[in-house]
Image 1 (cartoon, one colour):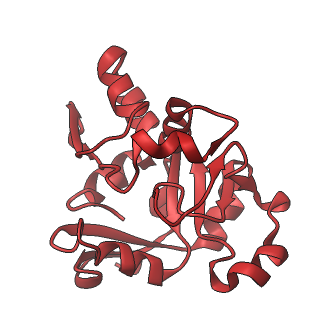
Image 2 (cartoon, helix red, strand yellow; image 1 turned 180 degrees about the vertical axis):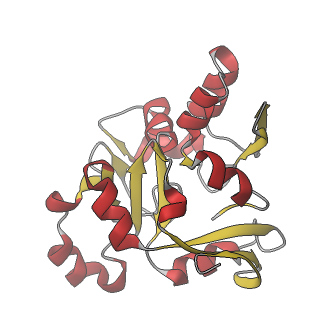
Length: 205
């Protein structure tokens, strides 16, 4: 899921993590620290020619004040930088629908990309990690920290399948950026209220 209207820029520059966007746009110092190392309670718009404005999404479902109580092996700023250095995908449609139908997002439009996961992982395997939790949410997701993201070959899938069933894998995360994301994208749709309402692009045309 991306901010509404983002697809045209994503096709040009790729699907970039927050850290990659800050690097591309030359954001440094206190401005960067506020975006990258702390909770974003609101979306932030940055811009630089020739790409125009880009929206970095809020982290409203995290809780910076309480985060320290559930972190293992790192501080709060380290955890925010960890998240901001990755590009995230839901692996189950049901979780996407639930999030976009939630109170914070249900009245907002989003660009939703459907991706050929097998091809994406084959191309970016060395930078791919899996998570058993929604790493960007505070309530209901449990402890997190240095062991949250694991390489595919190190991921305890069978063990988690017994405990979490269909949620054995909650997130797929790729480090820093996927500049060739359009090669793996099957379709892009406009979603409102947890469901698609308008096609934007598909790989056939």
